[in-house]
Image 1 (cartoon, rainbow, N blue to C red):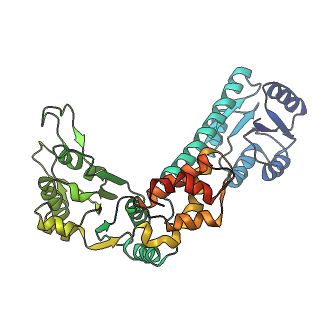
Image 2: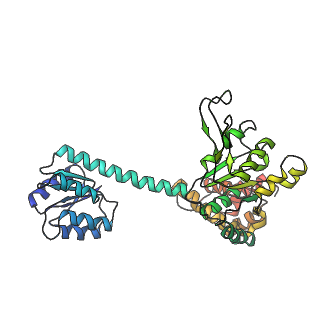
Image 3: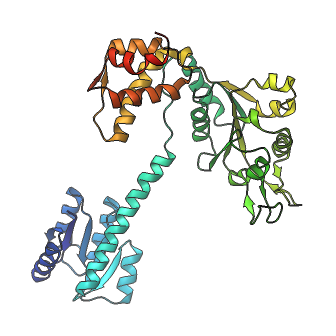
Length: 389
């Protein structure tokens, strides 16, 4: 039930508003002056405040200023029988959500209250969503390879050096790239991702550099490419080893000159991008096989960071499992399950071909199929049959 604080030195006004708003389903607290209102505002979180202007001890504008210092998120609606346009403007400038003259029009007041609370709810939801979007998962682990990666990230992230991340599928290359971006001076800019393996060769140039309307048959409108979208931030080129040689040449030019040209255009566009690339291939072998440009390899690999397989960091498996148990339980809205030591021992000895990604899928499967505690028997029944015991 939403709670409202009514501050007015006229008892009859407070009583009338309390009855009306109480009937509408709001929980009401009253205060006879600004000081009493401020005292209640300090000790309780309200969804909204209705505050008179002319009051003893502390007037409405003074209350508004002090209340905004305590909790700026709570909407405050000023009401007054002595108001004029100057007072209304002053109140809004100082942070009031709205200004209502006495005697208040009931319908207008109720609509204003609902709008104020809806706005507060939307602002809160937006903040939560932004935190979720911006949040980067921790790199979980205390093994020697993981400590080395964390230390390296701390050193290279604040620089503008390009980074080439190598490692098997599912090992966590994207997470490492996100942490480099998060700890860099570009963290307020965008991190734009391109999966080079998922885009057909004939479309990769348009994806990266954009195109002009009419530049080819399906180009019905202008397209802004990923390099432009990432300008001021970071461009993450995942599976760079699958990029066509023609696109590689254009990427090389963009890295050398800081310029790109949209497909079908005749003018250059300056871009300010830090490129982080990742691959599960041995790029030097790809160079030998004429599938990858050596000059691009050297441009991308100013810093080369290798992400170990899960089998190479088996001591981190209990920590990862504990994290996944908590994360997945939160996603499902269920209590976090426990896992016994014998089950953990079996999972540490398991040969993980899919690395951390496979481990998370296995933990999710065990959460779904097991009881309150995941046992060694559960692991044998739901995990080991996929491999030779």
